[in-house]
Length: 219
Image 1 (cartoon, one colour):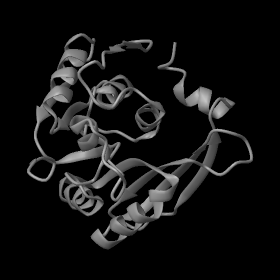
Image 2: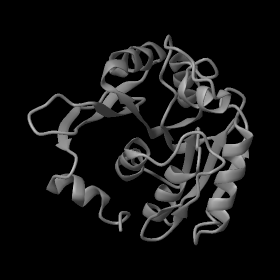
Image 3: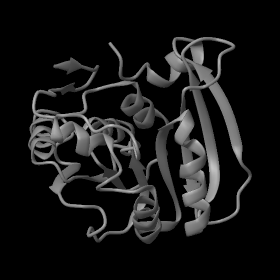
């Protein structure tokens, strides 16, 4: 079990465990009254968004039975249960309209599959390509909403290209590096439906900006 200040996350039934990617997506993404968490996994990001946006109604989607069961347990054991609904459904089929959409997407497109099928589904784009993700997000995002994702540095351009092709405009970019003066290893990207001035920033894990972002969650 991974304990945060206001909730705990069990992860024994879920292929993808609590990690930096999910935490950073949860602390950085903008929310609204209606929030969709695509590929919710343990429910971590949905719980973080519920803590940050107490008036929000949040839907967490996942196609993995174990992940859905895990997320439901974590949500029901939290003080945010009334805000969050967890559903087993592919985002390609989901119908809804949201002020904010967040996703820690599968990103491996051509690498060796893991022998664990559950983990393979969570990590590879076979079940959700970047193009399909962008199409679904654009279809369900409110006109003034924002769609946020986190990707490894070597998948950043592919994600940006798919977003541009579907009609999104890039808004905010946050690079995350593990060591000062080294290239960023992860990028948080946000997209909107109208042209806007692009914002770019880089932080280092453990620096004051990182501590400020995560202080309401980490013990």
